[in-house]
Length: 134
Image (cartoon, rainbow, N blue to C red):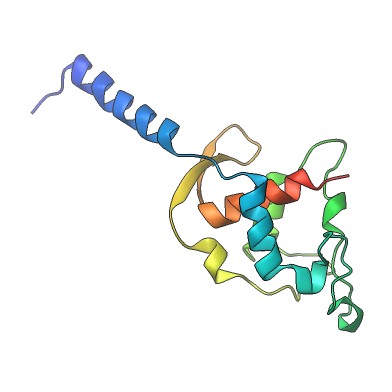
């Protein structure tokens, strides 16, 4: 069976509609996940001063200082949270959060212009972390 150009365009249109109907998570959604998963070590402000911080060596990172030269390193932050790459980080002991890696995915630009399927909870947490940069 051959497809006509119209059928191909219609197919692309459906993909475009599906992508535009996916709502991107915003910072408040990520703030809830942060409160559930991260405050024990990183504190409510994200500065690394949570109730467990004093007993951890090395101390948890200050998550309000992740931006570099005014740019938020999305790909790097995602790879640390999901446990993919923690090489050379003082917080290599940070636990992996499996629930943040589950569920529906959304198309997320991680900084290279390419939309990457990313679990919605992980994208929400990323939106929150980006919003608390100083």
